Image 1 (cartoon, rainbow, N blue to C red):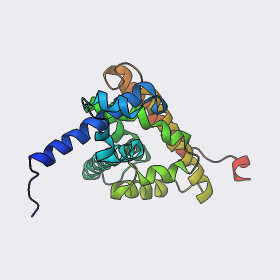
Image 2 (image 1 turned 60 degrees about the vertical axis):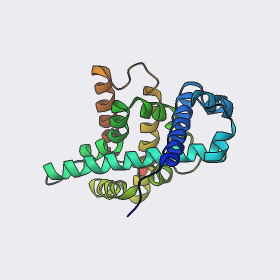
Image 3 (image 1 turned 90 degrees about the vertical axis):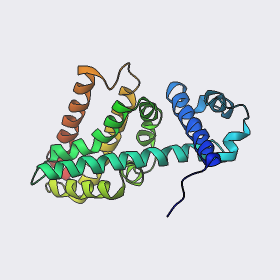
Amino acid sequence: MNSPPNGLQLRSLATQTALMDAAETLIANNGAHRVTIKDIVREAGQKNESVLQYHFRNIQGLIAAIHQRRNQQIREKRAQMLKKLEGSKSKLTLHDLCELMVYPTFSLARTDNQFRHYAAAFSHEIVLSEDSALTKVSKSGGGGKSGMKVGDLLRQALPHLDTATYQARMELAVRMCSAAVSNHMRNKRPTKGPAADFFISNLVDALEGLLIAKPSLKTKG
């Protein structure tokens, strides 16, 4: 049985959280290339710049920890949504599966303003990835058991796409959704009100349309 954290451990965790929150906020507002260790430490309410190196070694280590924290939240939220949908339906539709691709991130941003900063700060990384965006997202928030299950169900729901076309469509889908979310999270009140509801429902519709479209003769070669 694990012992509860002591006072020193709690203070350490609080400092780590403050540094991660500060980095998310600053990067969302200014871009990663304009944020320094000094900026993050100051934003986190810390006095000694070495505190970041002590906990994370460098900015890259800090960003890796941020991704790990947020990816776990996304996976847990997707698992909850998947369980609820499976409990209410005998079979999930393609629309349901598209919702499971985008709603976990949006839902977390809607209930946690700090998560919104994360989405604004880092969603574009997938868009700009020189490697496979699908592989990148599968290793991050799109992974885990729930992510793998949604992926399997998506493949089953799209039998009209051969393997190569399916992979290409999913690449486009992941980049499209990431670009849309990254841009939208920079708006005022991006998760509140009718405009936010329209954005996320329209994104799901667009995603479903992209995936369900039949390949043209040119695409088939």
